[in-house]
Length: 106
Image (cartoon, rainbow, N blue to C red; front, side, top):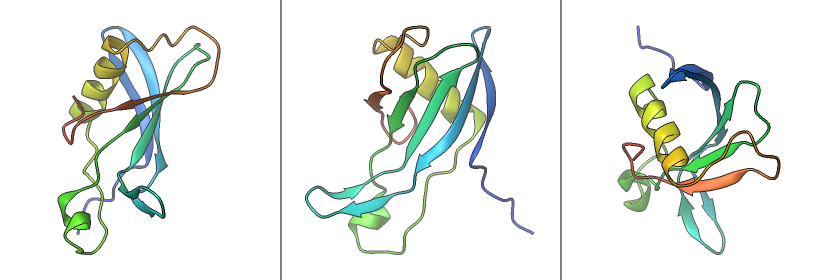
């Protein structure tokens, strides 16, 4: 039996709790070509989301069937840390901020 892929959850990073969920599956854009999946991050009690965009997988670029990266706790933690180090301020108000990471979430 295979393990089902998770589309969301909660994770603790450096003493703060964050909710995350899959915002967008990998897809092909008419004007930009293949776009990777995007996850949404929101700190508990905060107001501003971060959207973390992954690059499209190499299998999509080669024309193979669609698939997505495996999301585990370590990858989500790296995404949270990358967004925070890039300037995400979860306690401020405003539109979601978008960050681009590599396939490992850095």
